[in-house]
Length: 308
Image (cartoon, rainbow, N blue to C red; front, top):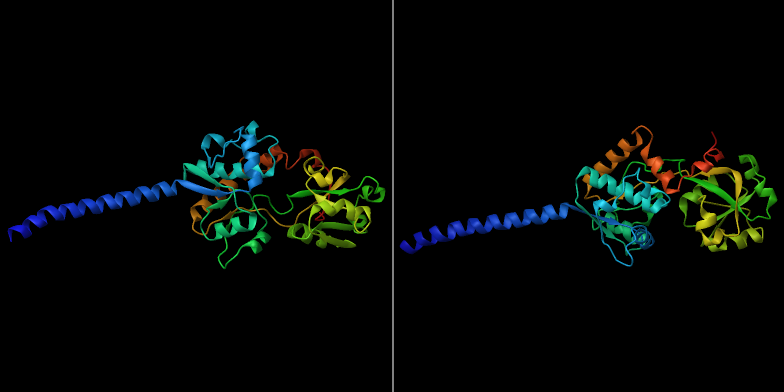
């Protein structure tokens, strides 16, 4: 009886203490986990980020708050679409206070990255996708989709051809453009969909953009569409030129895919987008312009498609 009483006096409080310690450790673990958001980015974006932050060969897997510039900052100027979208995301996360650290997952190809987000092993993508990109996800579970980051018809593209194609360079209307053939990478679903919606004479689909110039040279096609800065940023475009004064817009928005387990991220991201879009001047569009992706230089060019 005495031993039993001693057992209760000693082991009872000990068990309670152990239970409390276990609970505290689990709470601390879950809190630490909740304070870190994992963000999937491309290997190319990671290299550009290293260069932008002047990290000199370091491999930072954590994007600290002080490395996430405000969208009005001069550090946004000229950084391109990939980085400006990463910074839109990190501003949304850090301003909300749902995380103290952002962990960058940068070694996965596009399709695997989307699949990992859908499975909940990565929290959110650091770059936007077209909704059509969800066809790249393995499995039945799909990511959550944010509000539109780039809205339908905001993603504008220039029309490119070879310098010797005077008849294409003279195009100034949608009706004139429909007399010609386009060439585009077949896996770029939204570009293909947009070009087919224009009702061109033909849309030639190829495996990679390196074939563009050759296809136009042998007159299997007459033009391609691409970002305005392609003449300086894309090797295949070095011998091409923009058809002056005209442009088209893609028919799908760009959105952030978010893990189904992180609706808290989806909520703060959508709140940030809505606030930034209504903050007396559309901060999201301004950030894209500052990054060089949307250029005011071409804002007055005629938008042939969609028709006004």
